[in-house]
Image (cartoon, rainbow, N blue to C red; front, side, top):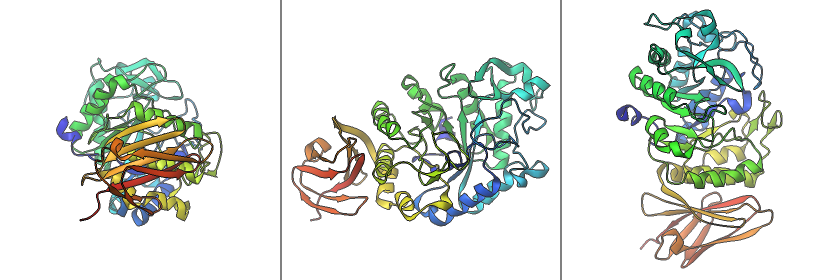
Length: 432
């Protein structure tokens, strides 16, 4: 298990996910278009995953509102397959392989979303499990359901054939060329808590399938008491329910990051959820608004990117990439900020005093990063002693979003920060 997990996500994964803009209704052309944009504009900065979110097997999906109990596309072994009207290259039983091949041809990696469990449709029809004499009905836990989606029953891990079913799923995904799997209704089910036994089945299936895959667990908030279990079995797990472009949700993330402080390590990343930036809500009607540019102000967008990168959350962009403006693209291509995200360690809250919050992290070459936040409604002077950052001598500072230099700092770092805003500094000893 440790060997298979050690092959992926040694730094926090970065990519695009279709959910925030297209809900359950993304099409192949839209996935290909966003992949092409990523290859041209973002790949050089470390962005690499292209992830098709929920219900790619539902031919009639039109938004983020699920149609209950509708027929789903499925093969002879109780495994969901892409809807060919939405993903034409899947015709002829090819599944996602042609789309994954295209993404790989761009030098990127391909991912999908799945729900935990086995399709209710397969259970009701007595569907087979590949390589066994067991049926879907034999392994289904029919009292283990998702409260917000009717596609699946849970799998009873104690039943013969349960592991074989998950093994067959990931065998198929390996044949398609999948590099990333987001499993939903599993990290923090609203009805049953965390589904630890199904996570074990999935982890084992990935390790057996012969292809390295990132395992992402949703939704949140994942229980802190299972932190070690998540780190052993998954590569990322959600600390929150779906995150949208609303200031109270962003403000709340400071508490969540503090709660999960110190739990990150290579191959295992607490996840702040997706970045609702750029143009979102095209066919997603969640989040309290429709087709729009993000409702976050520019200061709030910078605050979000600063907290996510300082904390070293995975970065999954949720907007339609092809509609990015220069400002949005600049948030995703700041090499100094992304170097901190990729290379730093020991992210920690230094203090929180009213509307002023300071976080810090250590760089690999002796530098220290400091993020100064103002979560209040008026401008604030935010300040921190160098000694509280672990610095024992004078340093030079550079603000990474603006590029402005601080000059030599002897005792304190200070900045005037706008409401809901952030300043992010790299602090280094002066050259001798």
